[in-house]
Amino acid sequence: IIYFMVSVTERAIQQLVGLMENEGITSCTHNLRVGVVGGGCSGLSYQMKFDDKIEPTDTVIDLESIKVCINKLSLLYLAGTELDYQDGLNGKGFEWRNPNATRTCGCGESFSL
Image (cartoon, rainbow, N blue to C red; front, side):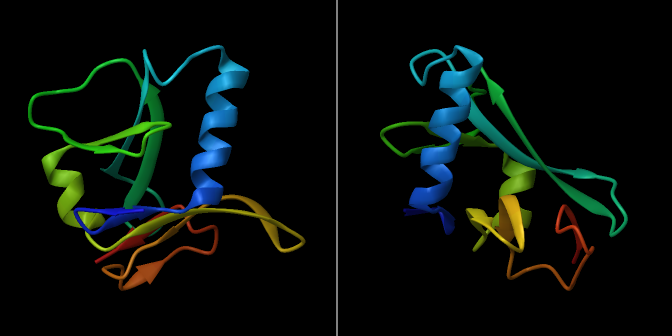
């Protein structure tokens, strides 16, 4: 599902909904907040958390089963990025595919432009 050039795969959506259920929260009261913060071995790190607020300046992606909120600054770094979930022999977890990144760390949790 693509919105404002940020996409979330069905596998990631299913995993996020499952995590919300495990934490006892619902998409009626909480959203997924994604962003970019300074830090990590490559300079910038991805951030994800469940949040019960939507700020007036957020871009909101309504994926029916969950809403994704992104602040304006982070949206610049995330344009064209895909959030996926991998569950296989080579690793398990959320994976960011960011075409803007010129360098990423080995774990895939930080990047630089």
